Image (cartoon, rainbow, N blue to C red):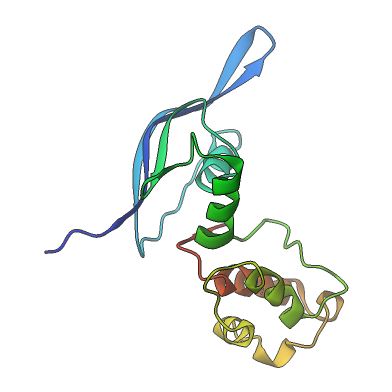
Length: 166
């Protein structure tokens, strides 16, 4: 049986936040492989490091120690420019709050991510994937919360990322 392709590897990753005279370990010596086409769910109580892990995977923060490898790129030591390109071309973010631009239609909100991606999909195709093709010209205020969430998903999918983070 063929081995699945490793997309991203964490090697002995820690994230420590200074708290006065003490230190808070949000992540402590984590090893993890994430494979292409894998669905990975991270569960845990509030304060257990889930958001910290997502921020590290998305290149939004750097670990205190360890390596985060995607191909030859180590997110822990990458320049700001390389991290920007990584976020732009490899990561699709679906935020807890949808962050839709209220003055743009659904299709225009999706087009925002397409404009900066290297190999985007057609924005209408992205809306079709989330069954919102008939709402392309609606503003966020004209659609339900669930539909707004699906526009945010379409926006993330439209950049053709290697990994979606929710």
